[in-house]
Figure 1 (cartoon, rainbow, N blue to C red):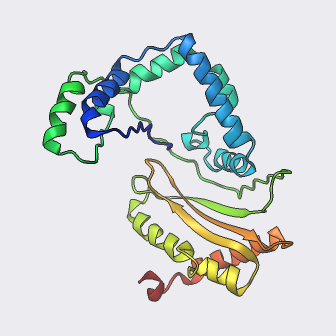
Figure 2: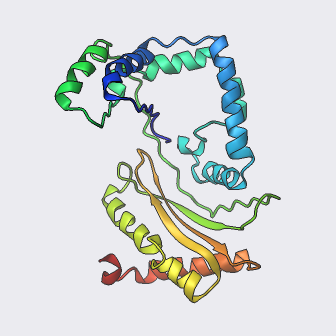
Figure 3: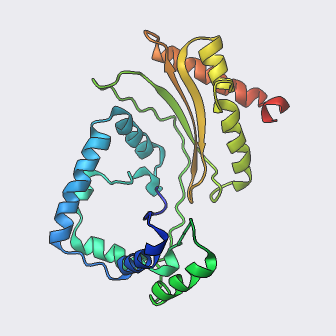
Length: 264
């Protein structure tokens, strides 16, 4: 996730007090030295190599985000660029830890065979003892106007299925014109909610220019959301032809909107 770090544990209910104690200790007493940092740095670099550098789709997505967001930190990969991973110092890590890790910057979620009455004393015992801190002021990131169409192309020997996508920054549930977030969520379902959705029906079944086609809306972010369209051409099909077909559908959507039956 680009907006938060989540720590997940699944334990037997009788081990919950121990887990609460361990997590509270991690929140406030973490010790970071080179003996711990360097092996973890190597793990993160290898994770980046296996998940991004060897996967053309991930490589392209990373470059698209870097171009799409001119100013917002969403342009930076969650795992980081390799030169940043290599260059982080122990002071960088410790300063970040001390700045952000505190109960007043965390949410504890517990589910399972347990009650609030049983959990609350544990939370008060293990987390309540940790003092709150003065958090850094959050920056209200804003994007400059986009005055040009931006195109990113990646060709790679590992690509087995060509794909085309078109993406727009959009309001999210917390950023920008938030009153449109619910409508965008519904629109995403109309365009891509299964085999009977508009884009799949028109481009795969009717026009037969694609093996897959659809759209998506990502609006559960603190910053700008994303609305996107994607299409993969039929075998031996033309990627540019598929892109033109998708753009025609986008133009039609903008011109005529959706009908009541689709919304229902």
